[in-house]
Structure formats: C-alpha cells, structure tokens
Length: 419
Image 1 (cartoon, rainbow, N blue to C red):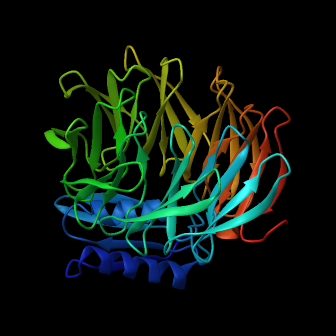
Image 2: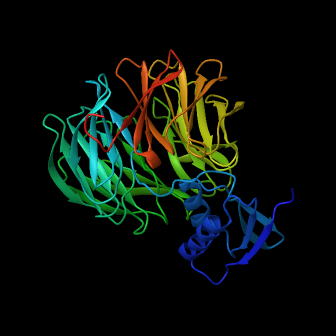
Image 3: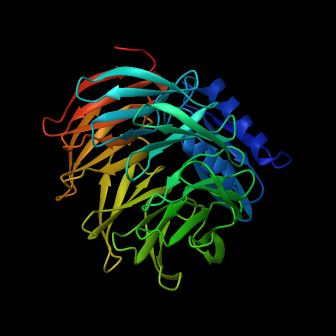
C-alpha cells in the first residue's frame, strides 16, 4: 500500500511552532500510513532533537539547498500523555527512587518491590541523581525551575535551590562537592554546592543538554546542541576554559574510566567525537547510526557504545583504536541503555515499542526482548546486580527485570503506595 505524502511549508514559523505543527500532524494522521514532509528552512537541530527525545519517528532530509523534516506517524509510539516514572536511581541499600505524577518522587523498597513513600518535590520533576555517598538525592524540576534536595537518611526535603529555566539532568561531580544543572533556554549551567548553595552561573553555548564531569572531578564538559560545541568548565573555579568544536547536535558525553578521553554523541551528524582531556583537543570521529545520542563506556574501558535513536541500534567501538566493532540491533527508539555492574549485560530501553532488550555484554549479541510498561526510559540496578529497574513513563510504572532469568518479575505502580 502506498503511503499518503503530506507536504508542509513551515519556513515562516519559529522552531517551537514547527514542532507543534508536526505534533498536530502526528495526532491527525496516526494509523493512516501517512508520511509528512515539511520544508523547514535552516538545519532544524532544535526541532529534530526535540522530536527525537519525545520518541517521534523523524528524519532530516536534504534536496539540493532545501532542508526537510520527515515525520512518520506510524513509525514509533512517542512519549505522550502521562508524565510518570522516567528517571530512576538505586542506592546500595536497595531502595529505588523515581519521579512520578503529582510532583512527587516515589521511594520503592527494591527487595519487597513496593512503593513505601512519596516525597513532594517541585513542579514537573524530570530527572534525579544520588550523590556519590548517597546521602543526598537531587531532583531537577523543569516546571518550577529549581532542584529539590532530599536527605536520604530521613527522605525529607532539606532544601530547594533555584536554577536556570527548565533544568533537565542534574550531574553530581564524583567527589560530591558540586552539582551541575544546565538550562537550555538560558544557555547556562547553574553550579551548586551539595546543600544547594549557589557557586556560579556559567554561560555556555546554545541549547546545552546533558553535562558530564570527568572521573577526577577536574573538568565539566557541557555539550551544546545548537552551537555544535562542548564548553569546557574548570571545576576549580567554575570558569570557562575553552570551547571545543564537535559534530552536529551534541547531546550527551561519556568519559573513559581514567578520564583521559571524552566521547561526545552528535545526534545530527550521526557520529561520536573523541576529545583528549589533557588538552581538550579532538583526536577522532567515530561513525555511528542515525540519531546517535547516548554514549557509554564499559567499566574496563575497553568498549564504547552509543544508542542510535533513529536507526534502532547500538554502535560499539574499540576505545583504543576508535574502530567500530559492532552494530547491535535493538527495538524502536532506544532512548536509554546501561551496562550492568558486573559487565554481563547491556540493558536497552526501547521507548518506541514498550520493550527492553537484554544484550550479552561480552559477545554483544541480543539475548532477549521483554515487554514492559509504555515508554521505558532510564535504568538502575540492584546492589547485587541481579535486577534492573526501568522507569516506564507513560504507564507510571517501574519494571523489575531479573537479568539472570531474563524475565520481568514485577511492574510497580509508582504513583500508588504499597501496590
């Protein structure tokens, strides 16, 4: 059956308006086998990444000097409606935290697999992270433009600190002395002390996304999606030490265990930039799949990985030679993945089809695909590494995966106590 082609000219609209128009087309054409081809003018970095992040099947296409965004409404199931469990963290005591509905964080007993408490936080909590000593939980609130700090000994809020607009991913330095929160709309990074005291607001590039800090806490690398750069922040005084030109649309960064190299995933140019941290210079570019977005490095430093949002696979490379050694097929729209603590498994969230892929961490071969709640996203592991906890945003559930048994053992309702 031939797909209906819908042609749009969105060149007179702002980036956010173009995204809204494409979302409207998605709603009206879903289930009809249609393809939307929209003329957008300049390279649509913001629009492309915004749609990819929400799980829409979209691509950038060029025809001579013209640039188009092509949307396939039936190609994926995006994250729509309920804004439930998305970001997950697990402590050494086996307690699991995840954001949930009604501006709360759910505290889950990982062993008993039940919610034991809800902690009130700010508006529209998006992501959370535990401090290295696990004494504090930091929750970024995109709706109230602040971060909630929770004392994990009592699970009570001890501070709320203002940030820039729409903070997304809090990044706690490995030494626990600083917390970094980028603001995309303001092009800045708010740096806080562990109790929420303001250290500095650092100007960075255009549309900063997920900041990363080197293992020795010496450098903070801020990828800027629209200016196609990485801002290097000196963590001693939070000054800008330089700006590194990378590929198109950098979003996330992973350091190797020794902090000698940083691997920058470039979502628009479909590659990974390798930066030497001793001099902040680019030393290699690794070709990846379409929509290369989230990188990771194995604990032994041997392999690097990147999840390719638009080609539904993971690229694997040798970190010494920067040579691609594998391309692992997964499910639709791999929004997030994580390596188990023992290195046995690579666990992949396929947000576009509500499933999890389990990949052999040594052979780099898929072993299982498991159905979970809708829009699976971030992943955490139990202290013994036997279980994976996966936030399922659109059903507000946390899926509990038995890695050895390769099965789902529970779907915990994050918004309800004791269920």
